[in-house]
Length: 73
Image 1 (cartoon, rainbow, N blue to C red):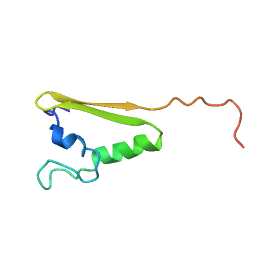
Image 2 (cartoon, rainbow, N blue to C red):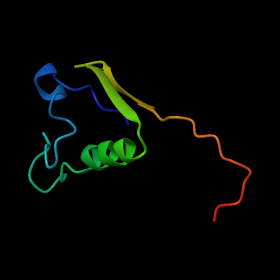
Image 3 (cartoon, rainbow, N blue to C red):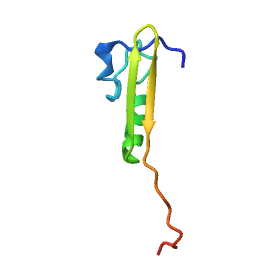
């Protein structure tokens, strides 16, 4: 998106359910929480770096899974 970054005091809360800095009715605060949960369920990690006034970077890493050619029973 084209946001202006996240303040340092909010970085530790961005993945908390219902955390938002938006006015009432403008957001639920669930988007990043849901994203975090999905990444965790896939044994991954999501990292956030931000500088207020400049922007934010989210990095998602997921493990590589090699599929077996054997049929599952």
